[in-house]
Amino acid sequence: MLRALDFVTATDKGGVDLWSTAANEDWHEGCRIGRNRAEQTIDFIREHQDAALIGRIINTAVAKQDSSSVLTGFTTRISEELIVSAA
Image (cartoon, rainbow, N blue to C red; front, side, top):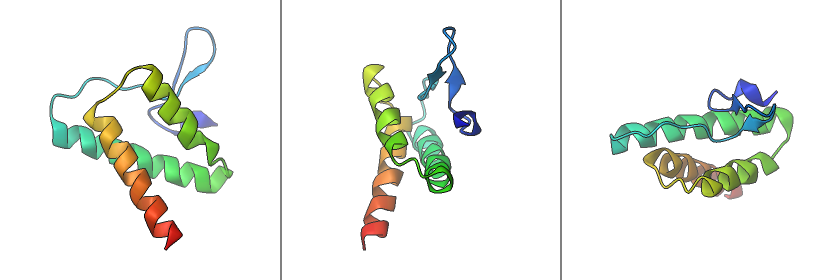
């Protein structure tokens, strides 16, 4: 089910990697990729009622010590969605 998200990949141990990303030297492109991932995640959460997925994705990125533009774009778009939803 999570494989519907194009950035989720299978691990060698039969699990899933919720934050599979390659380094991106172009900050703006990385942010765009991250925003696209967030849109996919938002749609997935709405369809499957799995709000905890955001936390699992962020925890995975933090465990990988990711501070990339992709993560910045992802968290920015998720934050924007939360602000709009709360209004």
